[in-house]
Image (cartoon, rainbow, N blue to C red):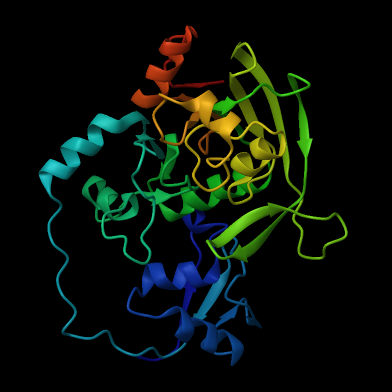
Length: 328
């Protein structure tokens, strides 16, 4: 293969350079792409570029001679119609640009050590014209609710830019042990990733810690059962790993069923949650964001069954879930 010049299309705008290469040349490894960037073999508009460079429509990418893909590469299996049928039951909204799913509790979004079944692989069953839907953001394995997918890389890049730019309003529901004081407000507590005997964790950081990342969460109490349990609405203004779980714990109101940041050894905490499902009571209830084709998109999901049962047990009234919609 000789050197080739390719033009970035409108649909590929804002995609990272390494992801652009993996889309066009899926046999390339990340290491190979980064090496070709470091040595100047890959260029954008004639200039050296890093693998993380975000592309603009109309730019020219220099594609150097590339290794040929292995002929032994297995042919992808046809999507399982049963998987497709199950995924279609989870669809909250879809159009020509996006798909929104109601992610179930306990289903990992992506693969990892020991993870065989995950959503990123399953959505291959929803592929159209050879393009599978692409993840735009993430939810923890045990967080249920709205998960947004893009139909093409270009749409995914535009939506990811909206998430990075805080153009997306994210609303979560959580059932927590205790009652926050004050009942509503903003949590401004920077976070840092740390490690202890139980593995990697997110922790509240000192403000002068160079590793600390700003983390902001608005909250308000929707219902409470005396001072035993409370239903909180949470609006994260930043998107740090485990942000809501750590921030709720910082209020002295850990989320019910949270094995990592809860207080299972605390007798008072244990008495408050006794008899409630020991599953994480955190739900991605709603997204409000600019639609990539114009206007606004509002997507809502009902709470998972274990949270609904807990609300009913406490006498909380769960409002009907609004229909997901695009509006102007």
